[in-house]
Length: 486
Ligand SMILES: NC(=O)c1ccc[n+]([C@@H]2O[C@H](COP(=O)([O-])OP(=O)(O)OC[C@H]3O[C@@H](n4cnc5c(N)ncnc54)[C@H](O)[C@@H]3O)[C@@H](O)[C@H]2O)c1
Ligand SMILES: O=CC(=O)C[C@H](O)[C@H](O)CO
Image (cartoon, rainbow, N blue to C red; front, top):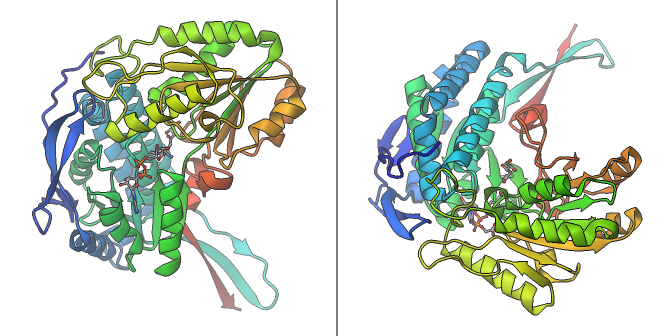
């Protein structure tokens, strides 16, 4: 499972119109290895002019008689399938790139690649099954609906799942027949550029996919404001999601889908096997070093098993192997950057100060890179900062509760609503919780059960719109009604 830790970086330029090009002003920015804090490489930084070029390329590729628009839907599906095959062929290289600039363990990065391939294959099959309908309208008309691609799409993704979130964005957009300008996160642009090269190799016509690395307010902002972009699809913080909504209101009312943050509750009842509960709660919270939008970061445990759970959860966190992402036995690599390290340590300090019980961890690990000790707090209260703010790090907060009614109220006491979990053998309890909790995904006796077929997205300030499944495809389609006088 181990992989050499210095994959050759083949692509560092902007990808526009099927060519790798320098930024107009030749500017570059450094990409940092979070395991060492040292620079990996310089990557071209797109400014407004570069974004204009990429959008113009995507617009031309979307013209009515373009190769892309006139391609059979089934051929579009084959092309997306070909891209999936090429990603599968290069899975070790792509996983190594994600492990290098994101810091996730190489073995986890391989799982992300597999998910990406599956998402592309799933949507490839949709291309020639995007049906409209006939409508029994009043009057002498024959009425039908067509589903058409929304057009040029600007996609902005974060750094926590660099390749996988690209696949979540590209697959439905391309299946719908849209053209794409993607801005990867400034921390993790490497796999997106490598996949752009694979799209060219697969045979996508020029301009259909474009990749413009750069920073959020500048490169991302130019995409969000652009009058020729018909839709923005964003994953990232709720703060930036809000800014995007404001910009879109000021520009051209482009379509928007937002997949934002969370503070998801996992509720564990007395009747569940404690060892099993500890394991599921550990995965829910610590997967991807806690850098997960749907992390189960609030663990509510019923009083009958509370003490045993805290003891065993602490033992489990202590067993985590933290270290080199490329080592075979590593469970947790570094956090993505200094900023996230500082944010996580600040929140841990607030937990200590506000009276939560630190069971294990609580500090930075080592002096090089951005490593954090897996941290467990017990006796957390709902009003503490660690109970309310998204930490996005390896920090488990354990709360005690007594009754179903009480815990439903407490689980819902958040501005977020991305996901929720419940562990119990009682189907009535599970369903009562599942129906009452205000979240886009509810997992019963499991956590993070996401697959290409399952719609995923948030209630409340966790976002709007859905990714994955048929719902994810609809986000990239416009509905047209045609009425014919007969
Ligand atoms: N939902 C998620 O999956 C997710 C992912 C990453 C971070 N987060 C949350 O966000 C917090 C901050 O992390 P972050 O700063 O990397 O997230 P962010 O929201 O700032 O960045 C996500 C993406 O948006 C871009 N961006 C930033 N500002 C922008 C703007 N004004 N216009 C357009 N694009 C912009 C970034 O360049 C990046 O590509 C984290 O602590 C975590 O709580 C959530
Ligand atoms: O932004 C989305 C996420 O972080 C969700 C993850 O992609 C998912 O939880 C991975 O299993």
